[in-house]
Length: 173
Image (tube, rainbow, N blue to C red; front, side, top):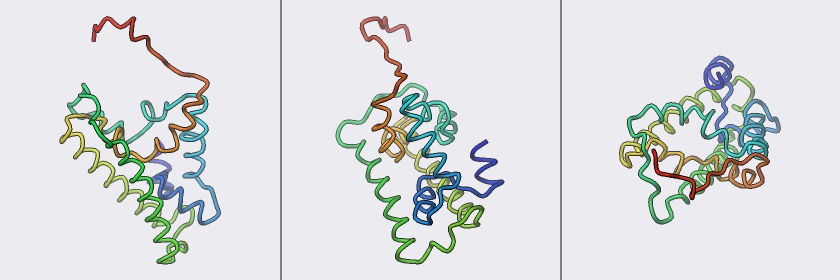
């Protein structure tokens, strides 16, 4: 619904870059509200519920055949998401300040729809590439998705946390 109705029908982009554009333009819009509710305040109540149950990128990537994750890559791979976050913010700042992109940022703008379609295309291509390369449906989530950069901070204080007991696990699969 968010991707189809809000994204395509209403030409409102819900990606992190459009949230930055909206904030620089001085209005919140659907993108700002979406990030505030689902990805900043939501984790205070429900942890990272968005990632597992509502993310449309994950919804598509979970259709791939690599259902059993091989774990995480060693080293600093998780820092790539922070670089992605900074690159997203930096590209918006460059377009905004350097190229006067601000005049194209408004509710229902063609620029918002174009950015949403191109941005999702890039996210899906990167997600598919990582999934195939690492044999892991959620490789994009683990290493490239910029959302957990700020979501992890609020999720630490979540009121509802799901924890398992490793000693109670009998490896039944």
